[in-house]
Amino acid sequence: MLTGIDGKILHLRELDFIERTLYGEVLSPEEFYKELKKYLENNFDWKNKQVFTTGELKRVDDFISSFFAGRIEEAKIWLLRAYIIGRYLAQTDLTGVIFNIGQVNKLPKFVLDAAQRYGLTLEEAEAMRLAIEDGASLMSNTTAGTVQTVRNAIVEALKQGKGSAGVYDKIKELITKDTGELNRDWMRVAVSETNSAFNNGYLAMMKPGDYVAGMSMPDACDFCLTEINGQVFKVRAGAPKDYTNLDPNSEEYRKIAEIWEKEVWVGKNNFGRSTSRRKRINPLLGNFKDNLIEKEHHEHSMASIPAHPFCRCRWIHINPEVQWIDKDGQIRLRVEDEDGWERWHGIAID
Ligand SMILES: [Zn+2]
Ligand SMILES: [Zn+2]
Image (tube, rainbow, N blue to C red; front, side):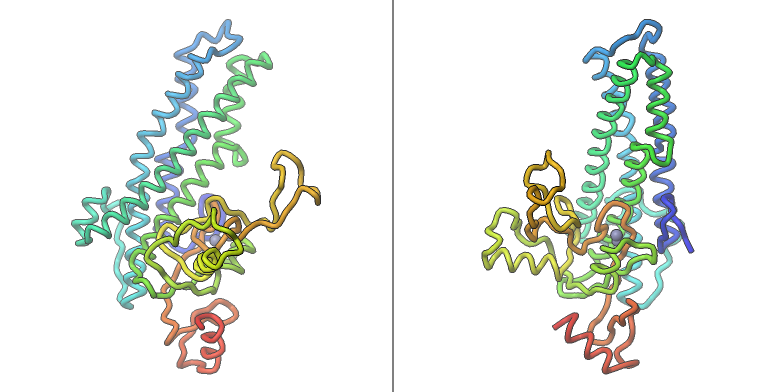
């Protein structure tokens, strides 16, 4: 059994390799700590330091942003490779011929190289570029979060009179401990964006109208095990129209809600959605009865991969005319059990 950097099960050695490279070498929270400490030591006179001015904090922000900016560029190479592996696996599943991925670090580095090597159409190359840019922009958001967290650590430690030692201790804890907020953030990005790129690469090889089944790892969460594992979805060309501002009782809203439930597309995600059934009326108050209302459809998590941070599920192509999925989530052949297929087909495909 293959376990990833977060101790969870994953299905493909090549993706594990990419996650480890992204997290450990490219984003490398450890190296970030070392560089940040060096920067703080060399640029500030800690002996008499009581406070950081706004200007000084801004310089630290800039240091952090530029540290990660270069690394995010490098991270794109690995997201592209995860995407390409998704394409390879799709090709294998579609044709039954096993395509050798070869060494992951020999795969193309840039979209242009990939487009040439695999003879991609303009649309395919553009879809590839977009998927990589989406992943990179989530990494930029994480950089912004890191800037804020480091800022708070500096201000707090100085306020408590702990000086440079207090600042370093606090940042070290955030970055190097398993439970450290920054460590978790960067690990989450490495895992989630690798799986996102991989699954988008896979879905990009499907034609609209094809079907995919979700496959979860044995240690997946309840949401993935019930909503994704063994469930079948129709592939569509792109996202349906935004329905968050439509009247939830309208026909149009209901139609789009159904698409979200039964179909998947490249880039489908749960941003702005959650698995909780209800939400707070006043977000600043607690979860007591009078402060909770039922959420609308567009606020609920739907089957998408990743369904949430750290999700390791994957899509797998299925032909519902000759295959079906049994109650254990296994893909079976129709010829093995015609009755089983018929019962399943009536419910899953209709
Ligand atoms: Zn899950
Ligand atoms: Zn999952």
